[in-house]
Length: 71
Image 1 (tube, rainbow, N blue to C red):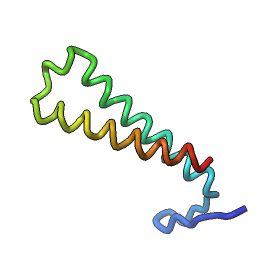
Image 2: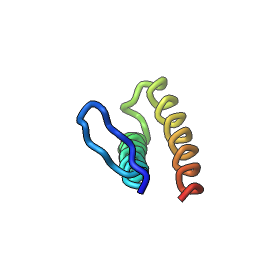
Image 3: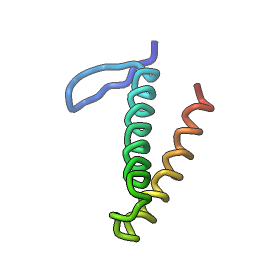
């Protein structure tokens, strides 16, 4: 089993676990951004925030696609 050291805590976890944690965090963040856009069709968001959220969702989708191709 290949492990990675998390030096701040001295904890060791395997790469698969680290990837899964990363995937879950990115997915949760992406869903939160999408929920904010969906709540009132983005009306309560400043236009720059709406653009930012949409760009972040696309970027996260790109990263998650790369993660899923490696597993």
